[in-house]
Length: 150
Image (cartoon, rainbow, N blue to C red; front, side, top):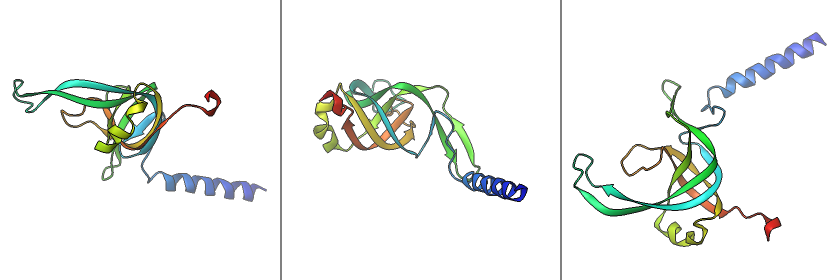
């Protein structure tokens, strides 16, 4: 019996060590590049955008983008595959700018202001055109309406 328990412990610890070489996921944190599915309210925001970060007078009139606003806040992390180090963004966020194809704006227009489920890949902000700390490169947006509400 002791042999079986010891053997099972070795198998479990080996499988845990094997998983440690993959991209880690900290509790409540989303690692950059991860495929995610989040639910929240789909909103449209408009702001002026800078053409040149060094010249505040070089502005385009307006830039409109869509944001998923979730009830839960998340932390974001980037993962360095060479050093296997995690870099966490400074604060939690519940707002995700959506990266959409032009046709997705037209096809999903009727979902604005509604509760939706967004699937895609999480990215961290790194340019002036990124208006939230985390973004989602969107694969799909669907209504989150439950069938019991029909």
